[in-house]
Structures are given as C-alpha cells and as structure tokens.
Length: 531
Image 1 (cartoon, rainbow, N blue to C red):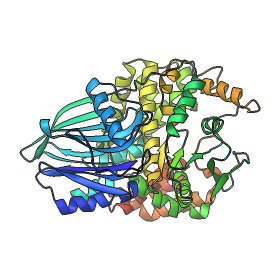
Image 2: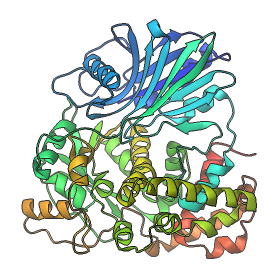
Image 3: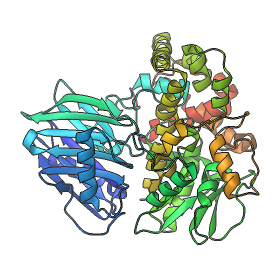
Image 4: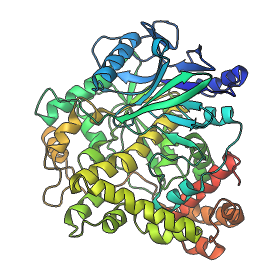
C-alpha cells in the first residue's frame, strides 16, 4: 500500500508539490520520493507489504517510472515485478489479478497513464483542466486541494449525495476533481509544459478462476490476500461474508469486531478476538474525524464504525486486515436484489427508485433547475445501464454505486492509520463464478455462499441480513445530537445549494437522511467550503 501524487502544467510549484506529498505520509511512512516530469513531477510514498527490500521510488522498470499503490497477486514477486506485470497487462488489454492504482510515466513516448483496478479497490482522484493542460492526480483529495490552493464546491454532486446517498459518475464534492472509475485508464501526452488527454478506455474484471468450485476459488483468493510479511488480522461483523472467511483462518489470527451500544452481540467468543466498543457519547467526534478522512458526505453510517475499527487496529500495531467487502455485490446479498428480481417493471424510473429510494423528493431541497437536472441524470444513467440487459444493469450499479464507495470508505479510513485492506471476494476470479451461479434462491440472497458456509460450519443457521450500519432506532441521543447540530448549521447548508432546507424539515426527516445531511455539514466545516 502506498500513496500516489502527480502534478503537471503551467502552474507547477516544486515546493508546494513536496508539501502535498507529505499529505500522503500516512499512506507510506517508510519512504517517499519523486521524479521530475516535463513541467511537473510524479511522487510516491511507500508502505512495503510484499517485501521490505529498499529501492528507489517511484519504481523504475526499464525506462518506465511507476507511482504504484496496491498489490498484484502473483507468487514470489517484488514490487518491480508487480509493475512489470501491470505494464504487460495494460499492453495486452488484460489486467492481472490484484488491487491497484497506478501512474506510469514513459519518457520515450512522453506518455503518462493513469490506471485503476477493475473493481476500484484502490482509489485515484484527478483534476484535469483541458484548456490549460493542467493535470493533478492523487490517492486522496487533500494533496490535490493543497496543489490547487482552493476548494470550490460541486453543487451538482452535493445534490447527488443528498438525493441518492452518494455521488454519481465519478464526481467528487469539489468542482473539477473526479475519480478514475473502476477499471478506467486515462492516457495523457506531456509536452510544451502541458498534459493532453489522448485516450480513455475501460478494463472489466477478466480474471478467470482456476477451478469451477467456489470453495476452492475462495480459498485461493484468501491465500493470495494473506501473502505479506506483515502480521494480518480479520475484521469480523458476524455476517455471512466475514464468518465464511474465518473458517479458513488459523485460531491464532487476530480478529477485531465492533460492539455497538444497545446492539445485539453478533460474533461468538473465540480465541484472539478483540471487541471494540462504540457508544453514543463518541458519535460526533468520531464522525467528524471519519468525514475528514473520507473527504465526502455519505449516507453510509458505517463510516464512523470503520473509523473506530481503524483506530483500534492501528493502536494494536497491524498494517494489514482482511475483510468481506464485495460479497454482497458479486453474489447479490442485499434486500434490494430480491426487490429487483421480483419487480415486474424494468423501466428506468422503477429501477432507480429501488436503488436510490425517494431521490426525487430529496432533490427538492435544491433549486428547481438543479432538481430537474439531477432527475434527468438519474434517468439517463439508468436507461444506459438497462440497455445492456437487466442483470447487467444490476451488476453495473452494484459496482459503481455500491461497491466503489464501500471500498473507498475502507481504504481511506483504514489508511488513515496506515492499514491495508485486503478483499478476498474480489480476487482469483471469484467474481466470474458468482456471475455464473444462481445467486438468489427461494428468497435467500447470496445462496452459493450460504450453502458453502453451511458446509464448512454445519451448526450455522441462516438469518436475514443485518446491515453493517448504526442502530439509530436504539441511539436516540445520537439522533437528537444530529438534529440539534443541523438546526445550528442550517443556514450554512443553504449557502451550498440546499436552498429549501428548513428547521421544520430537520425536525421530521428520517434518520438516514439526517445522517447524510450531518456528514455534509461536517464536510463543509472540515474543508472550509463555501460558495
């Protein structure tokens, strides 16, 4: 795990670049370095995971320089060989199995390539000003903001978060800053002190499993993800996904689970289990810290749960954890998957409402113009996805509007404490097996994983899915704290586009939307955002 930073263009400032690189120290405290580019620089911070061997960074392979964040899962290879495999994969159009964000500088062709893995496990943001040839990219938002020297809010993206719970089509809440999409490649030509975008393409998940058995393939994926010289831990939620991973673990592996105030215990006692408590009194301080690290507003109340876990795992000295992200999306584990299967209407509006809920009414907090544009955008992206077929549309939305933000949450919050998240369900070709299996059966979601867990843990009993989120129904103090906080900051939110937000709305809105608005206000404060 590492950090990536690049800046090219007419306003390049070397001193400010070095300052921005320090913003990524937590992603790679063991080493950092940069190389000069035409009118810019390419930098990297390093957290060694596959080998502690020292080497110059960014990594040099032949005449190519690579700022690289992540892992390529190939036996007995070091970071230079990982870069080689990535270069060869990009050339052939088939990415290797792994998790990565990559910036490749090839001086002989004056070409700079940005690449993100096909599931979007590793984040990569960029700012591109075509008319001026300015390009900035980074693993996180803060270095880009440092280099820009300003942060202008993206009102359209703010409306997306308020209406749907997250941003759409790679937007960030900062004007001009976008995410490289999962599997997306951007290629730039550098010359005359500028960067010019010359090619954009996408790589879809292509890793073929070596076995037709889900059990064998998941076992192989776990072995790949456990390959590190650093001690690893497992995050346990008590749900199917992490419980299944645990059946492959040795008893002495450290396990961390979150114990929420007033919530039922879901993880049984077992050796080397660390219980991390989270109480209502810690709600706002932990949430503020989590929003700052995430860099955005969200409806995911798991945000501060991850922050609490990250702090505990970091305090315990671990740099690597395994987690169950991706299983719900690949194997269809959410209640919405049953709703989508049972829906008789396959039009864009019905599809979007199952996904995003009552987004049309939530959008009315904004001006009529912004509301209309957002509704049109959601209809357009829904129609576009549905043209590829109903199941393909579900998988597309799962990847971009469910899995990607969950993975970004895990990355940013865990990496705030220098912890690499590894996700076995997204490797060894397991996604291919998932798409070829019967994922829903007799009203049961994730049927193949349920069957496998029953096989490996015969005493396990199926229960309806318990979402990894805060139990607001049992946290009245936290709910009241949010309402009080938003009443105090209502006018500030109106200043970033929520022109129809009123004290009466705040007093009656549901807990999920209350949380989304609270994170938006905290984001506004932490990043000092105003029009």
